Length: 281
Image (cartoon, rainbow, N blue to C red; front, side, top):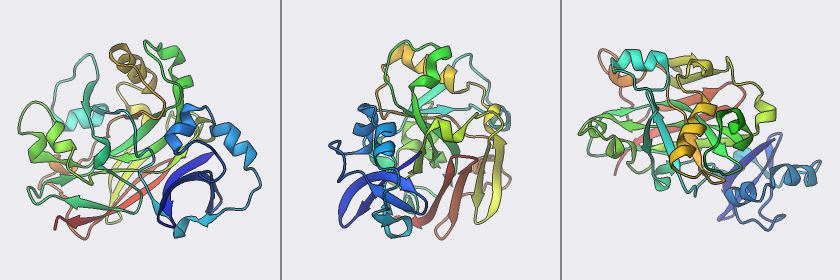
């Protein structure tokens, strides 16, 4: 099953993806948004009820929203791939490196990332996003994947000089319109085993990141276990699981995204997230 948040007819909507179209669940369900549908444990019920229904919109006629526009938490993981940790020459810690992204920095598939006027050091980061389905606290790793509603693509676009102003990364990770997220929530049964699934970034069609999800240092069950040890997780919460090697700032010379560029994040079985880059103002 695939779900999407979108706008059509001037209204924020969510729906079930069917072929090249989307069945509008906003008009069929009492829940106002995708996060609420997840909280009601309604993904499978909605999909079953709408099976065989004709799409209300074609995907090329809608404006994609961030997949979960209103999560209570967006928890991001740093230095979580072996090759990325090696290329940065940063020493590893025995626990995940964690920072927070604000919900109002997010944009949808095919929307425009804005390079801020404060910096030209705009970098890409392909990431697998976990969308929490069943909340909880003190979740065991052995039970963690039962708490995942689905997966999506995330581009943790980073303003590198602001990220390195101090030891905390928050400023460089939270400029407006730097969090592409989507296009779809794909349920775990459709994606299957994450082991060996490919993750890649293409900048202007050139592959700049290429790895597999099993290269994560802390895989999703371990992340959920650790995160839920210090904060409760709620339906619709997002965990961006870190990026593989090949980021722009470690290259010689550095490879920064610039106005006019197109960046694509693709994860095998999950989807393709595409965005253009423009200058602020």
